Image (tube, rainbow, N blue to C red; front, side, top):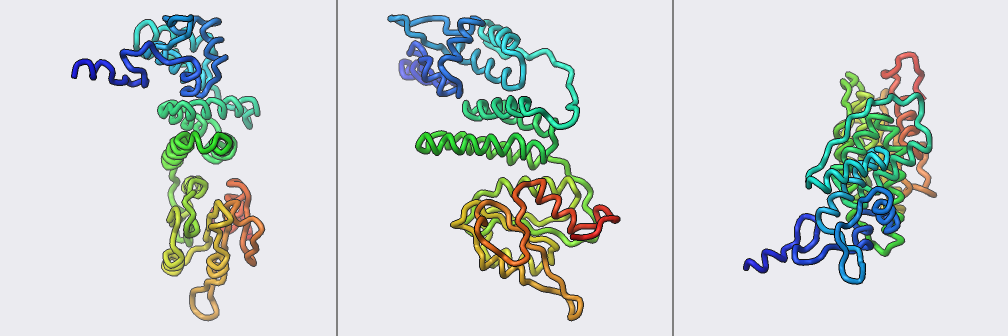
Length: 332
């Protein structure tokens, strides 16, 4: 039993009785290239403390912890030399060392493409190495810096697309990366600002079409509507036809948003049925505006339906349908 306990893997996935992990295996785990690890060793002295026979580099649990710290710190924007200095302290002490807080700079106007690309790269690398705390912190920072809509449009969506392409090209590898990132994006969206709801206005109904499980873009819209103070009824993924119809009858929404990620899930009969819905007394009957969101609706036509292609465009169209938000604006 004691011998078995000695060979149990520790928190870094390295068995205590083994010499450590190879550079290639560690690079795959962290989402960096082996060349990057060798550069960090050569330039900053952040490498394996021991080498096995034949001069093969083997990284111990302590070595792994140090480069994980290096990845975490550089992902936050800390210069590599400073990050390496703090990571070496961890290597010496076995404990994370907090970076000296830097004065926070307020962005002057839109962020540069170089800044956005750095943030995307840091988020993608943190997700690839399954570093949940770093993913959470980077998402929080993106929202604080760019606002919820800007962070979604310029940081979250590009990284989701990039990771999706990566696992498709790698034969369904890295699916766990996409799931982790999606989960933390969802949590970040739900922590957004909720403004006081505009009184006495009809709500919006937000729902994915039946069989559609990808609800994250709809969650982003829901969070943005919360910031505007618009009442909404969010029903999430794969809502049955009967449930959507019942929700519309019961709430009398001004806008219905139907999300379809894939063309195979887009339901034209449902969209047309909702577009024709009417309620109210004779002579004063009204109906909802139907908004079709997502690439699944490409090539489909529903008379009178709105087809925004981005979150900012969807919000702009919704605001026009709610002149109560800006009383001097005429409805679209």
